[in-house]
Amino acid sequence: MERLPCFFCGKESDDNSKSTVPMCQVLKVHEIKGANTVRTLAIIGLGGAIGRLVQTEQLLYRQRHISVPRCLQCKNIHDSIKTHHRKCFKIGGISGALIGFLLVTVPFIIYGGFGSIVWDILAFLIISVMGSLAGMLLGFLLIGDTIYALTSPSLPPNVKPERDAENHLNIERMVVLNWTVGEMPNNTRGAQCFKLDEQREAVLGIYDKLEPIYTL
Image (cartoon, rainbow, N blue to C red; front, side):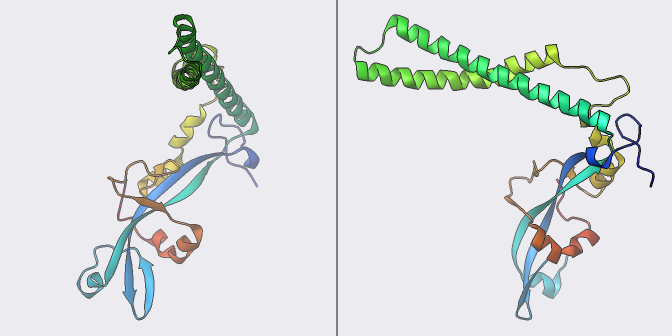
């Protein structure tokens, strides 16, 4: 069977090298009680007697990982870039933590503390930890990004970056059906949203036949 072309370079793709894009979809459901049973259904503007049976309303989201065809060569290129990115951030975090530690501890040692050994040790520990954490955060954001920008390996001219997978037709089709890119919903208008587990989703197979009520 002929394989799909790699989305990133156009060559023949490899099933074991595919890229995946996490997506989620939010749905509004109502708990309905009737005939001594409780069923959870997606309701689309039902009124009258059915509407009066509604007990609770809940926001749920479900997840999918959508495959995008990719060849082994492009996978290796993308993986090497991600590995380099992680290394740069680690170097940035460690460097920032060391700089933060020195910036707060050296002045403390030079100018002295409170005159009490116990308080001096306690103060030293507190400021060293706070300085290191603050430096680490800045290191991640500034030093790591700077190192990555200066040393990032360039992609071959015929290879798309992995983030372009979000432009694949499979993803665009899901977006039309009110799915959004991401592991979790990033905007539920202040409402609490719970993940829809696979067992409950199997019971609610009717979802796939309905337009979601609640869209991000």
